Every structure is written in C-alpha cells, then in structure tokens.
Length: 162
Length: 423
Ligand code: SF4
Ligand code: FES
Image 1 (cartoon, rainbow over the protein chains, first blue to last red):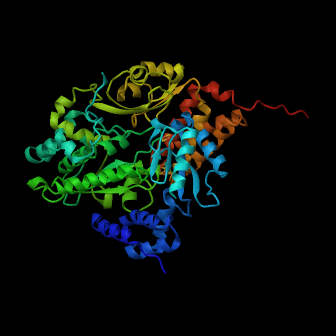
Image 2 (image 1 turned 90 degrees about the horizontal axis):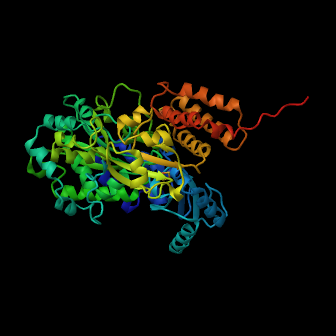
Image 3 (image 1 turned 180 degrees about the vertical axis):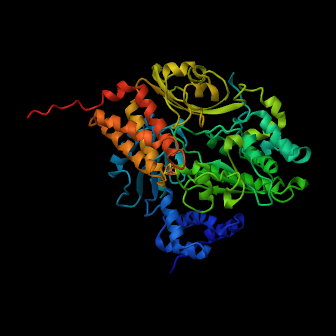
C-alpha cells in the first residue's frame, strides 16, 4: 500500500498547519514525521509530503531540503543509531577511544550498519554538551562522560530492548 | 565579581521547568508589569538602558536591535535562536531544559516591545529532550492564559510555536535560520536587507538568542538602570560560561561579567586537569581566536577585555587546553567542522574550508611542507574580510590562523623534513 502518515503523524500534522502563515514551513516538520514513521526519508515519502502540502511545494523542494540537513537519514539506519561527537571538547576528553571501542566491538566503521541491522555508528559534529564529553547520542537520548566501559554497558542494556 | 546567579538561581530545583515552580519564585511578574504598566517604547528603552548585549555570539546591543523594527502594518515576527552548535558551546541547552518559562516570559515582553503577535522558538533538532520540555512549557503557558489571545485579559495577543532544526550549524546564523523556518535549505541571505526590515516571510523580524531572552524578565523586574550595575560598564550583567576541555570541573557557570579568567579557570573550575599547566584558551567558542596562557591570565570575562586581545567573548564557550593538548589535531578538527558545515553558496568558503582542512590533515600526519603552511595563510587571506555572504569562512580562518601563528613551533615540528633529491 502506498505510504501515508501514521495516525500519530497525521494528528501532529494537523496541529502544525495553523502554526505557520506559509505552507512551505511544513516541509521540515513533515520530514521528521516521515522519518518517525519509516526510520528514514525515501522518495515515496517525500513525494507524499509534496502532495500533502501541495502547491507550490514540489518533490524537488522537499528533496532539496532533505538532503541539506544531516538529521534526515537518507538510507535506513540500525535500530540503535549511535552518534559519537568527535569535535574539539569531546576529542580532548577522549572521544576517539569511544569511537574505536564501539567500532571494534561491533566490527564496523563509522558510517556503517551491522549486518543484523541493529547498530549504526556515526561520528558527528558538536552535540552541544561539550562539558560532559565524551558524548554520544543514541537515538533520541544523550549519554555523557562516556568511558569505553560505560558505553559498552549502555549498549548491551539497550540491545536487550530492541 | 565571580559567581553570581541571576538566571540560574533556581537551577538546583528538580521542577524548575514547571510553571508552578517558576511562578512560586516570582515568574511571570515581569510579563504582567510589561503588559500593564509599560508602553512598547518604555520596554525598549529599559532594555537599552540595561546595556544588554546579545548572548549568541556577536554581542550586539539588544535594545537597539529591537529599536530597528519599523512601524508598519506588516506582521512582525519574533524568533528565539536555540540552534546552539558552535563547538564548545553548551549553555543554552541548560536554560532550555531548566527554565523554559523564563524564555517564554522574555519573549512575550520582547513581543510587546516590537509589536509582534507571532513567535517561534527554533531549537536544534538533536535537543529532543529540550524540545519536549519547551513544548510542554508552551502548552502550560497557553492553558494559564500567559500566551495566546488576550494574555491575562490584558488585551495583548501573542502566539508561540516550537520549531525543530534538522542538523545544520549554519542555521545558527539568523538569516539561515529564517530560511530554515520558511522550509528552505539553511542558506544565509545576502544583507541588506537585514531581518529587522525583511526577515521571516519578508516581514520585519527580530532574532535573539535563548540567554538574551532569559535576561529580559530580570531587566524588567529590577529596571535597566539597576541591571546595569552588574558586570562592567560596557558589558553589563552576568554570563553563562560553558567551560570544557582540560579543567577539573568543566560545566556551566553563571558569572558576573568582568570576572578574571584566572579566577574562572583556577577557582571556579578547580584548575587544570591532572594539575597540568595551561597552554592556551579558546575564549568564546570555536571561532574565537585562541589565547596563549599568558594572554589568558591577563583577561577578564567581558567583551572589551577579550576584544583587546584580538579575540571575542562570542558564545561564552571557554575551551581550556593544557600542555598535553595537540594543537595541530584540535585545529584540524575545527577546520573539519567548518568544511562540514559550509553551506556551499560562496566559493571562498566552500573550497577554502575544505582545502584548509586537507592541508592541516597533511600536516598532522607528517606529510606537510612549508609550502602547505604558506598556502593555508594565502587561502585565509582570500576567505576573510567580506568575500562571502556570511561569516562562516571568517570563522574558519579565526579558528586556524591565530593558532598557527601563536604556536608556530608545534606546527613546524610536524612538517616533513625536506628530502634532498640526489641526482
Ligand atoms: S560563507 Fe560559507 S556558510 Fe556562509 S553563506 Fe557562504 S558558503 Fe555558506
Ligand atoms: S564538542 Fe562534543 S558535544 Fe561539543
């Protein structure tokens, strides 16, 4: 069946409409709704968004926006998306050892997903939690002051839940 | 001087983000005062008198910014910039999560000052928790009649919505943020026109940082004149400094402006990690030029002092580097950041940031030559001083060149020794 917003996304979409004088502003929030439904943003979903918002927003607009922003996953990611900050303050706090540890445990490189589709690891730019480095964002949550041991414990705990 | 809480007085309360708690400590009294006793002009003047300067990075006087809004029939928009993303900066997240009502109250007062009836709080998308908390606070405020139509029955309307960023540092630049809110790529706009004249949906718009708005209720409560007594003559008030790197107690500290940097590092943050020695300080976020330990020890935490050392107080992010820090590596990471975040509109920025990053990579792995160093300096000259639409290219230069100049030795020892060709 062709994609349409899930019930929850549809409700949120309806709440968003009156917040903006221009329909175009709905593109970014809609892409988040699509991502919440599918885990990533695909062509079919983007076409759906363009159709839902309607003229003058076209698929090309939606696509142009989706590819500009890093938070929209252009391909599927693992159930646990581990994003480790590698910027200056986290680096000073030892973030490289966290990335190395996680990657060697999972047998993948940054940017890759494990074959069981459980884990994706990415190295990302500053997450805005620099005093509590090393920092990783796993799905929606921040994990701070990491050590190789603590991230391992966190991952095995989270793995049980997915 | 030293620690002084104005915004963060109740940071210890577990429920500081709730309306109940905020009201129990006098919250929303300033909003009432502004809506009942003050004209728009009086609010602007009070904020002008307070000397409040923008807490996002540029340090522009807030009252003046509001004063630029023309008197027209067009809608006027008020935007809170919560797109905190400058490496080293992590203070707005605290305000967002702990004091969302202070932010809302500040925005309602600002709205009246510029005659705006619609506002947006733009928060970086990674702050899921903060976005949820602010959304809940907005809902609470609506229910309590503190937002929406006819606020508190006083006849003023102001609607407020939360908007999530989607992962782009450049959206912290106000015209890029406006484009993002309009559902576009986060491309900075060519100025003029400035947002005050033509911003969101081509209407007059004010964009202020989270911390800036959070100061407003305090100014209205105590009057601009009283507020101005805190801090220094040209840098009134407190600031939230986000300290990271090689200190014993990194974190966010609200400090009276003018406090010696030495006191911040050694007393407030407990000194250098592992009792090491200080090598350098990046005083105001990644794009503020680095200070040597010597310079840092003479600095005070206010706009003028840091500017006199040819750097910037910027976003209030203080990154401490001890003698163990590898400045070639840290500089490379910052260049990598700017090349990653360049929006690509301007050639000097799009090409320059990548080139500088690649050359620094070469130097860091021991393959660089003196020519590469020269090339970085010559690229820098072409990236700065108004050759681009926004200051991101300049920021990259400021993160790289002063470090290479002040810490020459560290870079030159990493260069590949000239190999003599023997034939
Ligand atoms: S300077 Fe860089 S980030 Fe700014 S508009 Fe030009 S290309 Fe984009
Ligand atoms: S440098 Fe890692 S969160 Fe800012």
